[in-house]
Length: 254
Image 1 (tube, rainbow, N blue to C red):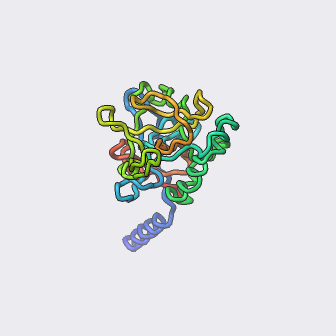
Image 2 (image 1 turned 60 degrees about the vertical axis):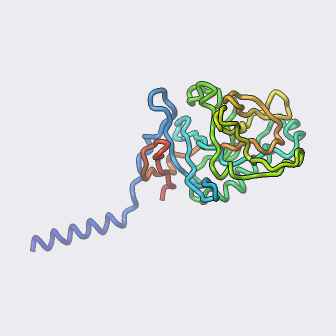
Image 3 (image 1 turned 45 degrees about the horizontal axis):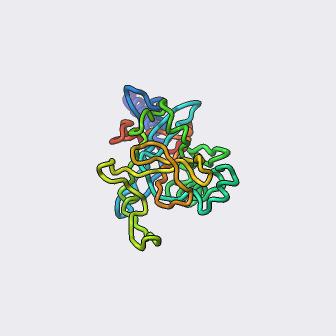
């Protein structure tokens, strides 16, 4: 009789464990850059990565964790895209990111392809830049984010981004849609910031040595490296080690 009772209790406990929602994984392992450990990485969303357009999880480099939010930037340059199709609105707005074609692209077309609704809900919408935006010039000079020198600002395009081609009508030739520096300079690609340059028709961007310069906002072969704030209360960590080779796997809380 006692054996039957214990068996019934055990079966009931197992049934209840199957029905109970899974506990949220601890996100305390997420942190910003530090001199000893470097960066922590996680995945959330997915976007075209392989040369043939196969999507892979987007790898985010965590720059800072503060007040329950992870400030993160895409590890790779995911695509080329101009800031805006006309200098004048950018000039007149004083470099207002929210009026730009880039803002519309990141929070519209890119969002629809890269995130499910549940994943999108894990991002925090900022009043001035939307849920997806670009780093600022100040971010790229912030040593607390790991940007300690020019080399640290370099980023590389994905195989898909580098495989895209476009026609340069000015020189009547076909060339890479995302610009890539020569191998002797590192084979990296330049990418935009959201900061208006000293020439009001421009925005700051990275250059060949990883230094910060500027270029006109209408330039189309400059890279897009999205940034965002991730709400840590809305994600679970389901696997991974937090390294670039094996990033933490973040999923929306069920």
